Length: 148
Image (tube, rainbow, N blue to C red; front, side, top):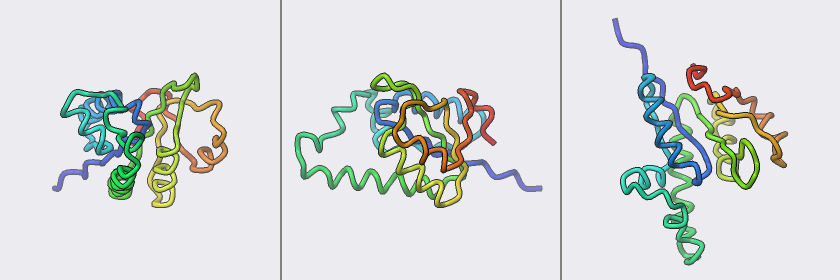
């Protein structure tokens, strides 16, 4: 008898939440999932430097937007290869359940490729709430054991 396939979860979030993404990776692995993180979150994990501005070099050097494009494409590919997407959305800029531009795009990829989209926390105050709800996500209210 063969072992059941281990589900792969790709974590998507604002770069400001990458420390929480690394912490979530450990929790999900304990539950038996294979976990994919954004490329920059992996760098942050290795260096233990979670200061986002140390990685967003394109603000000082516009030529580095090529690097930004590479990172986007790398993470989109992880979304496509995964079974499930988990959106980490904490408070940012005074907005509870913040989901930024990159994460919204990643959700669009997941939706297009028919991947279940789990959102960790409820959303509020986002101008694109309508689009997020159109992706038909599953809100788990902080309970990762609801991911199936």
